Image 1 (cartoon, helix red, strand yellow):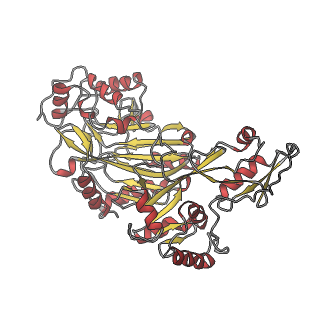
Image 2 (cartoon, one colour; image 1 turned 90 degrees about the vertical axis):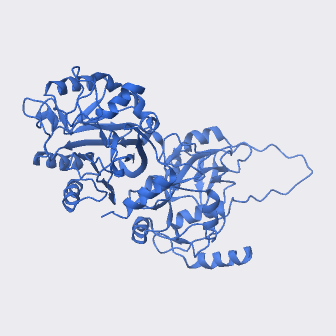
Image 3 (tube, rainbow, N blue to C red; image 1 turned 135 degrees about the horizontal axis):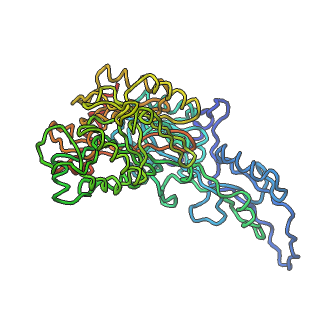
Amino acid sequence: MRYLARIRWLAFAALALDGMGCRAIDLPPAFPTVTPAPTSTATPAPTPTPSWWPIGLHPALPGEVRAELQRRLAADPRWQLVESGGASWIAPVPAGAPGRLGAWIYALTAPFPTATDEVSLDALRAHWQGQDTLPGPLLATTETIRLFSVLWGPPDPEVVHPVPEAEIADRLWAARIGWALVPFHRLEPRLKVIAVEGLSPMERGLDLGRYPLTIWFGVAPIPSGFPAVEFQQAAGGWTNRDESRMTVLAMTGVTALVRATAVQMERYGVLFPARDIAPWLQSADLTHLSNEVSFWEGCPPPRPRSGVVFCSDPRYAELLRHVGADIIELTGNHLNDYGREPLRATLAIYRSLGMRYYGGGENLEEALRPLRVEHNGNRLAFVGCNPVGPAYGWATPTEPGAAPCVPELEETVRRLRAEGWLPIVTLQYWEFYDYAPTPQQVQDFRRWRDLGAVIVSGSQGHHAQTFEVGPGWFIHYGLGNLFFDQVDPIGVRQTFIDRHVFYEGRYLGVVLQTAFLEDFARPRPMTEAERRAVLELLFGLMP
């Protein structure tokens, strides 16, 4: 059977086209072989150290890796890169091999509306070899197929399909089934990253040595006398996933530390609502909270059923600090329920805690001002507004409040995108207790996307709502309650924390974290069955 599989692969390799459609796929060797010199009983004369070293390039090297090596070594006469004939090669090497130069990180992806979150390495490799362990084809560029053939052997051509890089997301999206192997830095929002052996390149602190889709490159074999340290200094240290160029932004829905939620905080401690999901928020580089209620020293003691005029004890701000909130959205409807002064005091609390805010402010000018955040080279700009109208007034030229959705903000988003910022627009929209957005809601959210927003997020959504995704952008119509006391219908207890990942100035996509609210206050991670059920429901409602 192995012989037949080999014959089938060779026939496929002769016919399959690469990403440009002009070169056949050749199966590269696992490692270059070096012919040993003839043995002799005579005492060998000392071998002089060469003044330069010919270094071959393994045929499976990705084009970007090849170009980076050529760039780094072009001006150094000690090294001569050759396509063949070198005693040593730069080639795929084992994780613990000496002479490692860098790593290329790949992601297993599926169409965004895929409920599966994880597969095993055994299942993935078995699928590569033609066993029916996963549904649908496995897409990859010719370059990626060459590389993984070194590691996993020849693929089954009926399963593994060579596809130009620019067409992978289009084909997966059109089919809504299948898989693709994609370099990390080439991800885009229509591709959901699937964890392999529980590890995902979308998460910070990834152990590259344990992650199964890390490909290491290095010198193999290392000849006697080779100046490995000097070569490492000249040619090493590159990767397509450098966490110093990566930003993880956690975005959340409604927070209102009032009524039964506040009663539970008084009973079990201020940090009680975050007991089960704090690490999800703390582990992000930037954490966004939409806190709809002002803190006020004169706030009455909380009661479970006290109506819809809200304030929070200033002590509760410790919960926001505990979960690592960096960015506070001020588009909420209840900021001025007890007048303007509590909001002024609240803004002072945020500033004292080092928290930045947007979508509201001391006056209309500040409320309309975008919040620009630069992190690891990624330039994010937050814009928020309330088109409905808070019960006690928007911001005015002299008074604090939420920002209205005025035409000036539309021009702000256009300008930010033209200047190289990645706009993130959040809306305190009309509240609908349904998983599906209304046609008008779809139209209004898409308008901000068309103005240049890469993310449009519905902060008003007490009830979780569905998503929409396209090349370079993502819309979540309603994330649900984060810290709030609603319990009926069930959709107000289902909540999302959206972890958006940016890399080298590009938006790569989102990881959807799901929780279920308990005890009128406390979101806890969904069970696997709960998560699959809500994801399949919402994926089925995507516009």
